[in-house]
Length: 297
Length: 312
Image (cartoon, rainbow over all chains, first blue to last red; front, side, top):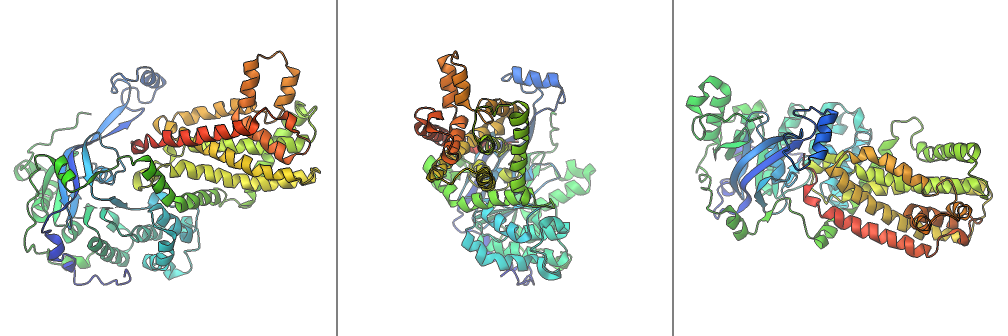
């Protein structure tokens, strides 16, 4: 399946049938979601001993005074995603895109509000489960098991994963420890493992940007394929081009707030105006929120 | 991707319906379509089922960690056996030669080495458990699996490590002329009970360590104190016969100490000069009780906080 490298006549993947759901079954519902990170040992005392003591002794008192800094990463975000939609998440660095994605995956607890999902959304990525000291071969097994595949499924797809990664194109590298791989090779193997599983709700965090040109084309084709099998896809990317190619709806997050939610073209136009010429933003992107409220930090 | 640049922007044949105006009650919409709350804690039976489904991952992760540990060393996996042997040698030098705790203990070297190995199993399971969540936040935040898989996997890794040590121990026993006896079979139930106990404690420590990472700094001291109270390099029963003036709660506490119980059971199983009279009364009941208490209690305690692991 994945060997089918030539991405067939471009965006044919957007079969109109799966794009406009007729009965609109919701798959992910975010209801007024707040996500807050707490970071120890920053803030006033900056990790000094007295600040730490303060923190322990006056536990229930104001967290700010105790040197715990709260980072309000996502603020009051609500949306409903329907089956068959491909939703892009855009926003400048640190705007809370990846955080929101992790919360949808159920990996980060929300502070307020609720996230409802149909089945278990999964994040495309296994980096954390892989070990550099092990061979590529063992990492394929480990990564597959970590994603919840059975041993039989892995055995079945093993060759496919290795071929797709192209690791063995330049010799028998799959039996060498991953620490001996170049960063590009390692990234390719990671993507190949991650993309080997089918998902109900698929969350992709800038996974497209790895490897060389030919591998990028292959991975785009693979993502399109995954999209076909998945009910709903979320894609976080800074590449407006790949958002345009893949998504039919876009959520624009800025400073943790949902700034816009709508069809790809509309939102991207505003977003490009916002990032392209910052001075103009109050005129052009004034729609939902003329002036982003600065973070009180 | 450049190739894609020539692609005309996808024509929107029928623009997707505008994002649904936030329905008055999103929770009701979710309920109507049977959606579940993301990241909610599953029920206990469901949790056990999920954990069972991940058993191959638990095994593979433990083995992978164990292999990765020495993969850069020249001697490689030889260190699996060498490390516990060197440990035992150091303790022998200090406690056997310099401090003379060996007096009155026949077969001191097998006695000491068994103690060191069995204790190291408990100690490193607890240490690894403390860092199981806090040291693997990347994994916890990237993938979905019952989090108990991590402390269990780390305890399993220590168990595998112990198997290497036990192989070394058998060689040592034979070298020092300890006869192979039918009682060696008793090592199996003793090990099983100790493993359950260790895994339970590892899960308790994993939850505590996830909330307060500082515990990892504190644990070495707690564990060292515990070790000196567990008769790793001296005989508790000798000690007690020498100090008959100790209050009874001290002796019962020493005898009920789970680490001491598991160590003595292993010595009883393997060393023929270690007699049943040196074991505390009701020793198997105590060993089973601790295993059940720690195993079941630790699992439930860990599961209670399942949805909070991984918060930044």
